[in-house]
Image 1 (tube, rainbow, N blue to C red):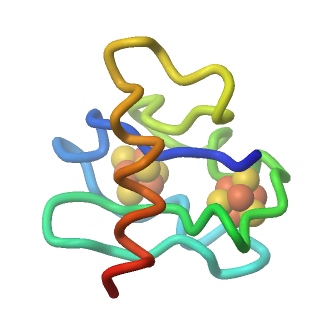
Image 2: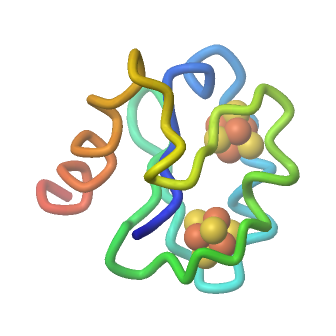
Image 3: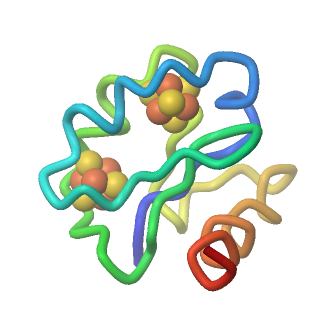
Length: 79
Ligand code: SF4
Ligand code: SF4
């Protein structure tokens, strides 16, 4: 289980979440930020500060945003 960043980040992308993550597992991609699911410790600090509510616990990601679960993981496999 890990937290997942979804599409609303594409509009905002200011990086507040990066500042609060205690394990530095949030990285910036071309269009949005991503969370490394292998490092995230599920603390929820990022979710609390995201101004556009783009961050969800993996099992609470809305249906229409489900592709972002694999997109977050893929980002770290490719980078
Ligand atoms: S705080 Fe939210 S909108 Fe801002 S970079 Fe992080 S996930 Fe994206
Ligand atoms: S839940 Fe905690 S560890 Fe995981 S990405 Fe957010 S701030 Fe980092």
